Image 1 (cartoon, helix red, strand yellow):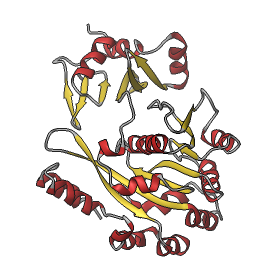
Image 2 (cartoon, rainbow, N blue to C red):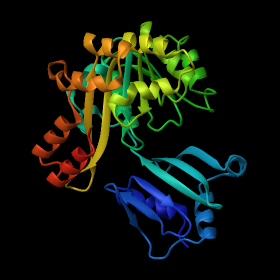
Image 3 (tube, rainbow, N blue to C red):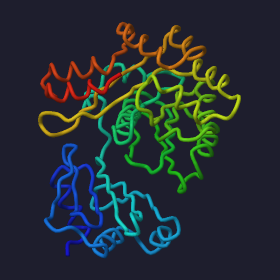
Length: 342
């Protein structure tokens, strides 16, 4: 039987992004966006459990038995992994994300120049949006690295868990992990406001209290960077208001309209060389966009983006077209992505 150490070593050598360990299936690697089996025989329930539990120490095994899910970061042989071990139909399995050892730069990710412009704002809120596993954290990290490299700023991150480690360059980066350095996002955010920050980066806005404090901080002179799970920019208001309490929509509209600087929405699309590349839709706040947020539905933001190229905005269709023209993605992939683009 293979060991988890052997699985990890093999994955590192194969340019794998994710590893899936599950009963009644072979060990699966995600390579270029596709799941690929690395062995012929499916794992039994006991084999899946054994491989998964090799990732945990005794304390972590106890926490898994109590919570039924356990998330953590694993550093091993100069590599870093984001790990989830949990129960699936009564059996234990694991999902392992292999993380780059260093933050990728905006240039390496080939993100639009507007991403730099938004990272350099002195205050306000910048959101990176998209569905699950679309590279939002990678983009957020590249923006932090850009600020850290070029500006003498104090950056505080609040993450769950810490995925990329930053070293101090021109700036000072202090990273805090949920349940290790602070209790939760809202507690960490409140504390960060007392720690003389220039920039606060929040791994994810996932509850009303965090959203409200972040918006207030952004309005009062701090640059707040964060991610939000949402399928498109025009669903942003609906998503944020879903976290609110009765009667709070008008206050959230006001805070968002006053503080929001821009939104970077992205989708990872398969490339001709078998890797993945981010296609980006970008909203930069203008007076017209602020008025829409104050008074109307998010679907009106689509018109702002389509007519806002002079402000650095671009639609997802624009981004897909550029990638196709550069030969990075195929016509078939471009057609497939745009077929779902509304």
